[in-house]
View 1 (cartoon, rainbow, N blue to C red):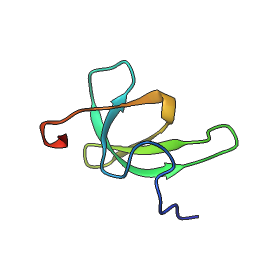
View 2: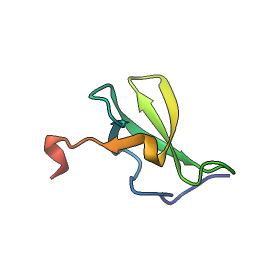
View 3: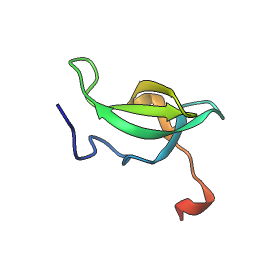
View 4: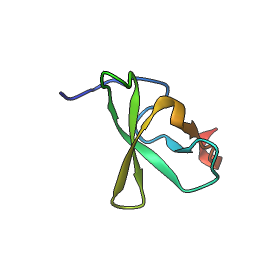
Length: 67
């Protein structure tokens, strides 16, 4: 199933990081939802590492161009 609209707070391309850490940062590249995770994000780190996080596991990273 292709999800075209954001499931949660952040749109594709938003820079985020794992909550409670200072790095690494990544960009939201997709969304997912399961029986145990209502809103989940696929986050790209670097050029090839994609990790999945529930919404509560990541936080927004403010960048100078985000104003």
